[in-house]
Image (cartoon, rainbow, N blue to C red; front, side, top):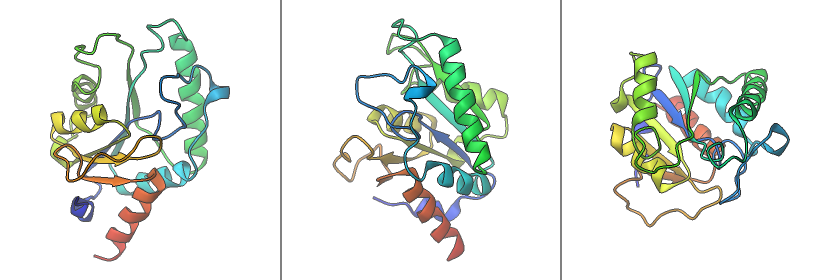
Length: 191
């Protein structure tokens, strides 16, 4: 396991983030369907404030199959995201764009681990370089997504065990986003 790439992160890099289980609490198999159910993990807003200083672009990439299952609609998702963005910005952080996939089928180009949402981001932000990108997620699908676009990967063990390491899909594992942010800060201040 090596997080040496953190030494090289500068303002030319892009951060891709999963949402559920990384930014907010997730119960496996259940869905956050309204803002009242959305709970930030401790330290996430502080982590995003740090990331806002370190990365050129911060992009959320999230599968949201709950819409296709009829558990919520896109208006509910927009409400969640507007409130989430407001709380992040009020704390000094930022998210440049949120991409979500509601498709049911795992073979959908846009459903992680497939690269469709990253390709949308690259179209919207042509300066994104996938080799200078980091994907942080809490599932192996997130890690495979990162590898599929050629990015570095960090696994967050918020609600799932760390995969056995070394692992071809995972560069490093941390318990939380704030732990990644603290490590990134220590790397950049001790160069």
